[in-house]
Length: 244
Ligand SMILES: CSCCC(=O)C(=O)COP(=O)(O)O
Ligand SMILES: [Mg+2]
Image (cartoon, rainbow, N blue to C red; front, side, top):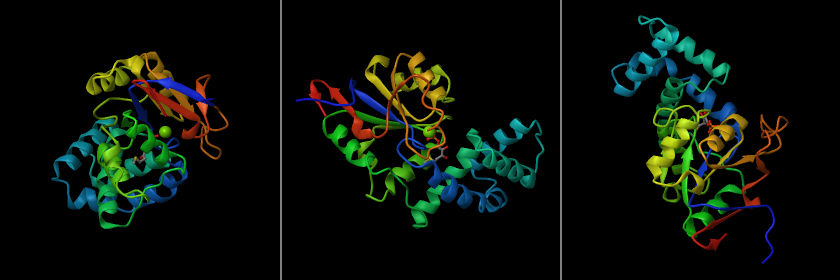
């Protein structure tokens, strides 16, 4: 059989979300305003929730102000949102708000058309799928549970964020994920839109493919010399002899 595109012999594929499986425009235009409108209530009404308290402590540490009040914390969160800064406490608090919004039916996630069919094919052939996103694990779980094609969580073997794995541009984070998945680095493929993340994965011994979609923020810049694909159906995975 003739195959076109890129072929990888790996045991697992690790997925970035924003810009890779899903549109940045959806995250910025739908999810960000949804969280911005709810930070104030979360910070004032649920300050004793352990996840909220931990994130607030991290914001205060980042601000260098251990006494920053709820208004100051909210202001910092909104500034980071404007800058699209992938700060862990921002992502924790957004994850709480979004997962409740998904559960309530206010939100349905977005996946590019080529993604879910390909994930189903890879999963059915025995390739394990993981997520590594700046979005928190709670947000990732809600994202895959509430997709336009229903609950996709059965396709995914594990979720990783900057809190449990570390920053996405550091090779050590990819070493941690490989160890937790029990997969040799050379048997892992990372798909992302950001060159710095692809560099870090490659430095950890992984395969890395840049996903370059028209209209995404990194489209013009390119993927920094990494192999690239415009859609998931340009990628063929061969796991334990099967090729899909
Ligand atoms: C369901 S995750 C929400 C998107 C998000 O907040 C984010 O920061 C995604 O970043 P990524 O690392 O997936 O590019
Ligand atoms: Mg991304």
